[in-house]
Image 1 (cartoon, rainbow, N blue to C red):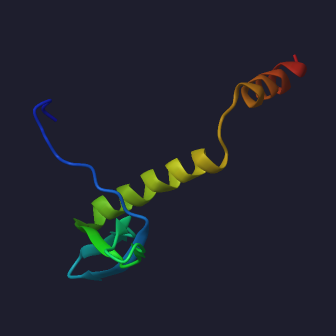
Image 2: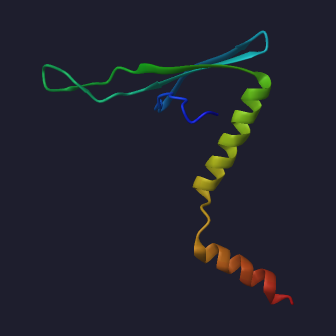
Amino acid sequence: MKTTDNVGFTFANIVIGSGAYHGIVNVTLGALPFNPTDDGTVSTEIVITSRLRMDVACAERLRDELDSLLSKIKNPVTAESVAATNGAEHKGH
């Protein structure tokens, strides 16, 4: 990708809907924005932030990448876990 590409970032915290049709995967993402109202409350209305459309190969790759990222978040690699693993590998030698 060129360094001149200028695409904004999109935040989502909810999957509003999804489906597939003729080999195209569709996912609609949304968010609960922080929008104060005139009466002093905060709006809780979900807004659509992104509509993803992709072929099956892209959807599979996205799934694999998300699985990998979520695994890393749930099981973070720490210096202690690396040291423990390295120690376990070397004990048998």
